[in-house]
Image (cartoon, rainbow, N blue to C red; front, side, top):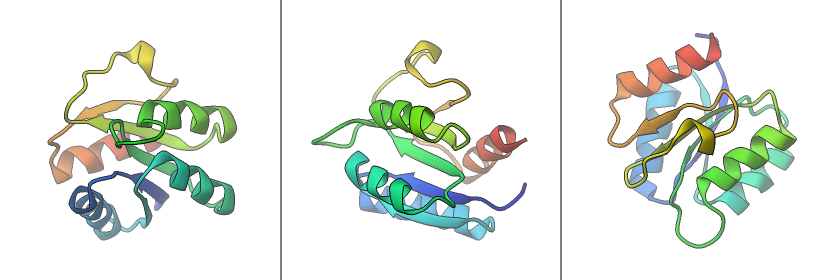
Length: 119
């Protein structure tokens, strides 16, 4: 799989760090954000971002589904993967070509999902 610049959006610091570590060890450049507002700021300042991995439930502010929809509208080429440990999501709730991954996920599941999406 080619290397990507991936934005990981997760409000739980340990989960964000874990996902970032998995993706970094696979050879990607990874940036972290704790909420949708920070993610949008980063996307606006980093045109090199090629993928986003976002949780849905992130406390106050917009959720990850809102973020995924904005990313698809404003940055159509960016790959998107949405995750949640609390919500079940249907394809109709997601932007086009944005798969859903239930938590907990394994390292291999995360890397496989990115590989499939990037293929």
